[in-house]
Length: 256
Image (cartoon, rainbow, N blue to C red):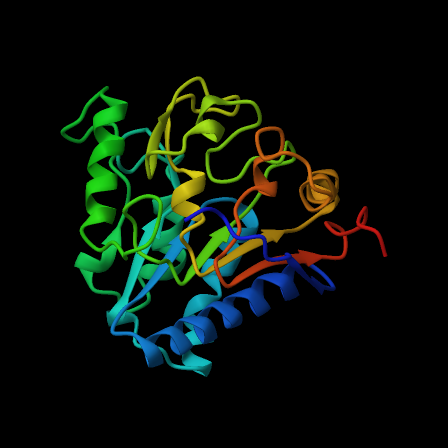
C-alpha cells in the first residue's frame, strides 16, 4: 500500500503553550475514539522541545477527558543509539514528563534498544529487533509489518528532517524495512534508530507539530511540495488524515 495522496490540513495556534496544550488534548481525544472502535490503540512519539511539552500535557488532558491508557501501546519513532539513561535518549523525557504519570502497562511501552543492551555496536541488529517487536502487533495491508498506528506525533528540524530521516540521507530511500539504523547523522549523536517512510505511512493519522520562527522555512518547504528525499517532512501521510499543528511563528512563511 503506497502513501495516500490526502491533502495535509493546517491548524494554527497563537503560541507554543497553546499548541502544546491543545495537541495534548487532541491526542487524548483521538486515542479515546480509537479505543471506542478497537481493543487497543497505538501511539508513536518522537523527541524535541515542543513534543516534550505535548507529552507533559498528557496527564492533565487525561484528567479532563479520561482514556484507558492500559489499552494504549506507545512506540518511539526514532531514538539516539546511546546507552540507556543517557540524557540524549528520547525515552528519558517521555517517561519523566508523561508515562511515569499515566497508567500505561509496562509491556505496552516499546522503547527502542539502547547501545549498552545486548546488541552492542550492531545497529542493524537493534533495528531488526525493533522491527520484530512491531511485526508482532502488525496490521494487514501495509507495505511493512507494523501496527496501523492511530496517531504519530512528529516534530521537524530546521532542515526539514523528521524522526531520524535526514535530507539526502540513505534512509529516505528505504522502502522495504520498517526500522533502520542511521549512521553518520548530520545531527549528533551520529548513530540512531528510526522508523522509515513505509512504517510511518501505515499510520491512520500523522501529526506534525512545529513551533517558532526557526521552523518556518522547513514548514513552508514541506507543505510546498518539496521532494521527501530533500525535505523528509514532506513525505509521511496518514491513511486517514495528515495534520500540521503549528503556532503562528512556525506558519509565518505559509501562503495566507
